[in-house]
Length: 77
Image 1: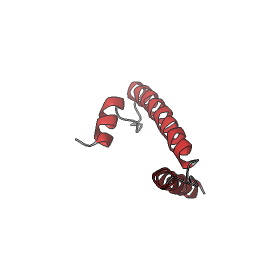
Image 2 (image 1 turned 90 degrees about the horizontal axis):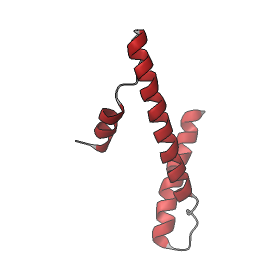
Image 3 (image 1 turned 180 degrees about the horizontal axis):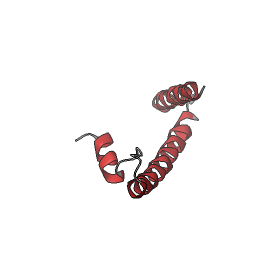
């Protein structure tokens, strides 16, 4: 089982189905998921700040994180 599948199983469904009780649960699941994603993006942003490090392995991680953040910004446009 992939990590993505584990997280989805832990959080539960998020897409509304048009039924009040189910949609309230799914909204709470969505809130949980968005908080998790926000925390993860913060972590990636922290790593991205090291993109110009003089240490090769640190800068490599920073560049990967920075590229991912740029991709997120492009999706937002």
